Image: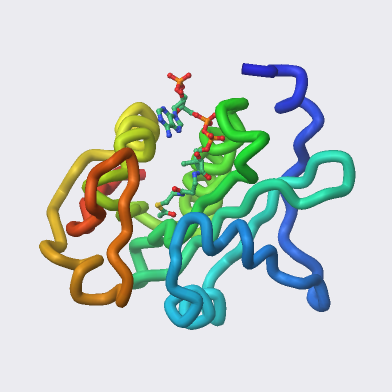
Length: 158
Ligand code: ACO
């Protein structure tokens, strides 16, 4: 891990006319239709390194007490430097500041690294949306050699 790199990261909301970093968003969620739908009503934060957006986190208001992290992604060459963890902490703090009581996140059964990261940061598995990816995504998705079939839901009390 390059801890120096983390010190150079700043986090901000995108400007009004700023293009959305779709490549990043699609890395976390292959459905452009789903992305466009939740972006409309979400809080979006980007991580910037040397003037360039390298990561994103999208916080969707699920109900009056709960935010869902719908999308979190770090540009591949900068992964493993703590940026994902920093964005999780940022999203959690924003949810607290907005008075939420819970924050939730969903990831695939094949997202081994993601399940590790989320549980290490205080999220607990609360349920499984069985066949979510089979029912909602037209193409089969594989990660870590495992077919992405079910959505594992995790929750953190704030
Ligand atoms: N495999 C194993 N461990 C991992 C992985 C992985 N794929 N990703 C992160 N970790 C671990 C790190 O080793 C580190 O552990 P430590 O705290 O014990 O040292 C910890 O998780 C934090 O890692 P970061 O460096 O902060 O994570 P990173 O900056 O790489 O961001 C992320 C993690 C966002 C999952 C990134 O790998 C990514 O963009 N992946 C592709 C898109 C994606 O899958 N997004 C999540 C989909 S689910 C959703 O969006 C709701």
